[in-house]
Image 1 (cartoon, rainbow, N blue to C red):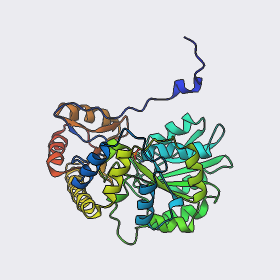
Image 2 (image 1 turned 120 degrees about the vertical axis):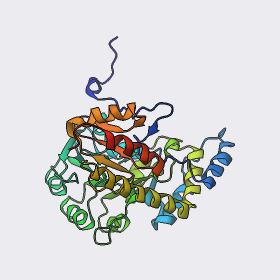
Image 3 (image 1 turned 180 degrees about the vertical axis):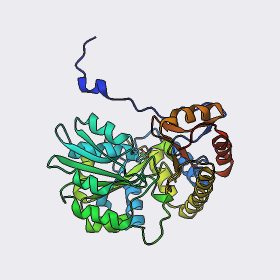
Image 4 (image 1 turned 180 degrees about the horizontal axis):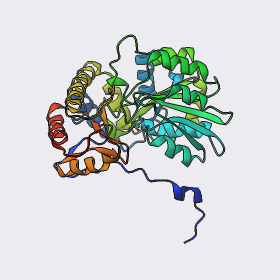
Length: 355
Ligand code: PMP
């Protein structure tokens, strides 16, 4: 058939998430293993009874709860159907054919894909040798066609972070009419020493072109409900509102997110446990000869180069599903000690080249 479908889509790769199978330990998608917090399960059940009605399209209650928690105004918050949609919508409101979107590479796979879906041009700036964003090179990559920049912090899939002073210096260099998205999908797992820590909300006051992206998918354990949010200047929020797909954040997702915000103490306990497990897994992998950068997220990166696919295939045979990036490395989600032990038993016994 010859249909009038955009021919440039032919060359776009399809996003393929990690596949799993019954009985496998799934460490491929940076999810939490435990279900949502008990109070959140109750809120989900209550909201389920009302799904014959459309959700609140204005997402009023959740937006107000987020604004209150974050100390911003409601017109500085946009909730979306997962932060991935907000990535896409930020590209939509800024970029089209001929425009450039700059980001580090390797990073979150949606950035190049969504940029190309918009018909814009991805500009991928290689990470430094220690697998962090090369902010100087990213600032130097800005042209008069640059419309948007992504800084994924901590970076998916390497877990590395750029610290406060570097981030501020970068923002000072980027022209103030270019939006810089600080994708903090893994924000809740950050445990930086004071000298390196940054407060994105404070930075945003200094740099109004900064957009912060966060999600309920990771630390809050609501990946299946699809809810994330952007914090930015009201001008950006107004534009995001125009491209927001009506009713795309379900009533169940809204209720679960509100209940999650009310369970802050339990959330901290859960993230603390993952952070402790992250240290244990990193230490053990390094002791076994793997190159693993310090991670500030709920996953670790094994810098395996050409051995990445072999390692992941052997993992599947051992009942562990992890995320390989061909020719580069593998990303392994950190969850709890039981699953961590299954992965470590496999990794410590793997016979292939480790670095
Ligand atoms: N940003 C980053 C860096 C991510 O890793 C992910 C999920 N893999 C997302 C955004 C999107 O998350 P969600 O759509 O579930 O909110």
